[in-house]
Length: 609
Image (cartoon, rainbow, N blue to C red; front, side):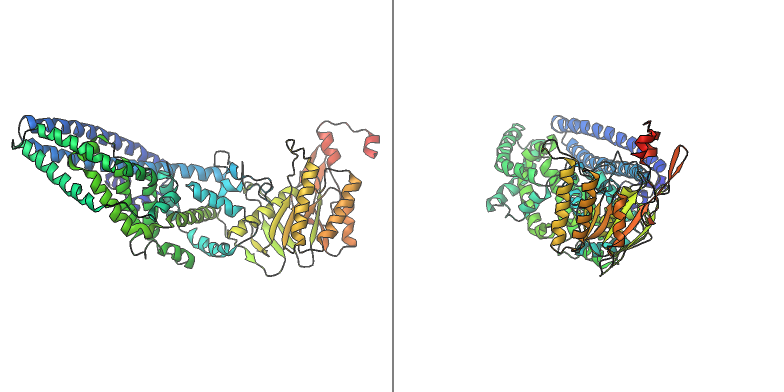
């Protein structure tokens, strides 16, 4: 198979689909041999370039028949450039696939430090993103993100910040189920993107330009026809002695003057058009999508757009790719010479006008569509890599139930799963437990899986059913010296937001960790009890964790409150945890033992106090 691939002299999607399933060792072999092929092509290209100069001189100095050799050399040189570019594209794809396999291994090991953290999306004021590690180091974003363009990356971040599922979540859910099974499609889509996502420009600027009328003037027909005809006639005439060779110099000067007519506009267009690699990436993606036959209605709809347009998107991008290459390489030495002889700029202007007239409508909105595809590929790749099968079930009643739910950011082999139910009659779960017993991790487990469910993604559980709550957390409330804000005040401000939204009738799911920890025990217990009762008058439901075991007695007087807890087992100089949630309040705490283990010597009077 490797031999057949190496013999291939073209770059197409079938070839790519084949290598996308290769192991890293096979890809490294391909990369090595591809580098050798690129080196050979580079040498041959240099030799041919030198021959061009030789044949050009001989055509005028010796015999006009050398002009035929010059033409043949030009054709061979152009063909070698094509082969060279194809082989480089092939090499870039191989490198992208190798990098993808390395990133997959990093994600599987939950070694996420080398992956894009999405740090700029961190927002401490967000209802839950900061508390649940959605962005930043060791975050859900690092586990999920397979996008390659800045705009798709932003779209993914925006969806991850959703506090509640939307209509798109439901169509995404069925789409992800089908897409996650098409491994070759996913790998090739991402690989093609990573291979060509460089030096990208703002596609929105290009889409705005598409709506503007193109600058083609009737008078341009004259130089477009005269340039090639007279230029070729003068060259042939000079070769056969019909015209003096000096006349070519005069013609070149005229050609340089004609270049000035179109220079400014083409220079501006060169800065507007997507880069050559960006256009190629969009074209390859379009061809890849166009070649698929999806059963899911939503996938069928957004892929059909690439097939049923009056003028094919992929053909439009293919033509644009050629135009972009010429326009953005107008200062290439060979093009400058040919342009001076044949006034090629006017042909470019006509091609640009004709292309825009045919394809402008077909390419409108292309970037947004491909951004959605990148997000879908990210979701489906994540689902396939994690082998997730539990898709959320949405209830019409304000309840929550999960079976064997675990935290996505923990290594699967060490993550402890739990069952949890918040029924219709319960509004608040009071969660008590020893230090380090797993309270905070459990709350984050619920929160981050709700975030996944809101995307339409499967969750880390065996079963997951929930009402479409609005998620809000209060867990990491840090002080801010610059704003003279203490952590206690920051927590109060957070709780105020929860109260304000819940009192507006919003069905909220809240997660509050170690409530009011910044104040004394008496005030904390009094404030916590007041908050629990105030929340009971709203549609808010959720969990409050605390070290104040005194609050657990509220279960006896408040029918809507239930106690759950995490326990620890102290054995000699060790504290053991099972990280399993249990019904009822925590029977014992471990703070004193932990302090002793850390070297703090507690005397009897201190213990009694």
